[in-house]
Length: 137
Image (cartoon, rainbow, N blue to C red; front, side):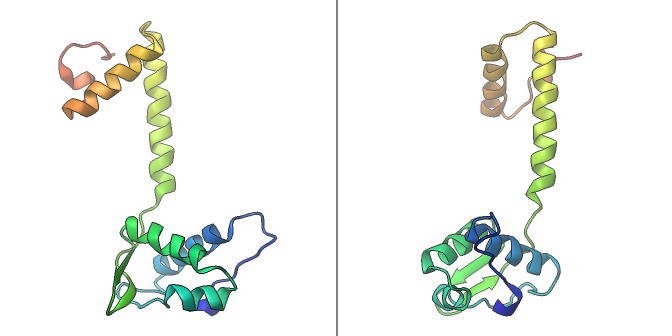
């Protein structure tokens, strides 16, 4: 597996991010199917010429995202295909921009717009669904 991961120290991208992105791609491409065992942190760090802390960061981030699972006896294995955060991030940015435009269009301040978002999160409903019509179009 490590032969498929290459780290370019002069590439302008942090080594941990290069390793993470390549692992994610290997998982998405099916080259590392669910259940595949990954090398230990120390072994992968040695193979790639990186510090163990760098590889630990990658494993920890992917474990937090649900893509990897670590168990003492079994080591680290692929647990799931990572979600694409780029699409979600783009959709969220567009939704936020649309919301800001609506808040401004109806004459509310930034503080009022933020307060509406916080209220919506606290009440698990959107300002439009709250029934007051404040942001309905």
